[in-house]
Image (cartoon, rainbow over all chains, first blue to last red; front, side, top):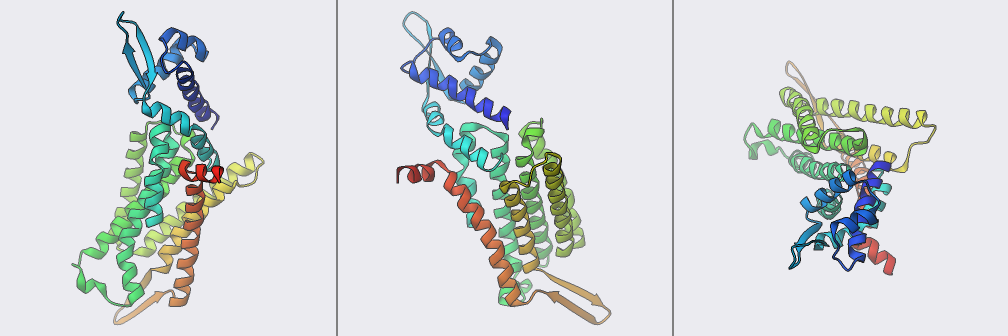
Length: 91
Length: 220
């Protein structure tokens, strides 16, 4: 249960950091603000990208920025319900 | 049936967002129960309306219906196992599904070959006893009492078993002598109400926890 909660919480933290950065942040500051190791960060980052929670955008200078998709915002909105549901039914 | 389908469809968002194995199997438990109830419905009509429905269906329908009821109910029960013990299962969802399918297929073929509802009842009662014993052992080892959710899951399995008992008839044949053993109509209605009440109470608990309803409750 603890491990599951931890995973959901890390995802929530990553998404919240992006949202609080006006939904646009470069990968390096994101890594720093999430306090994760590079390896763990890239695991979560790739998962979130693959599942459509995040999208990568490039500015005119070719710099990469990360922003949330609608699904990412939806996760933040429903995070507390997901955790409460799993606690309630011991999933 | 409707309650099970509602749970399956309304928890879709939770799974899609969380990607959690436990929620995945939890949802599928209810879809499988709904499918099991669909195939259970036709023999039940026979018992309810006291008519021989076999004349309206081809001869293979009854064993086929039993095969499907058995298969989907085994899938439901095993999926519930997978949901509750998902933290101990390291395999991927697809691999766990292969195991569940294999076990369910094996058990349901056994029921199909014997063409007997009591065999289905005995096998599922054994699973129920095993689950209950396992839950109690885990609770005793952890010096805890059985949790509310665990009691709910055991009641859910019990509700399904009650449902099978309520709509089953045991036909004993010996030479020209045929004995049909079944539950009386009054007892059947009572068992059916108990089974429905258990499903409904779990349904209400689940629905209350879903985002839309939880939000309504908070803003009220």
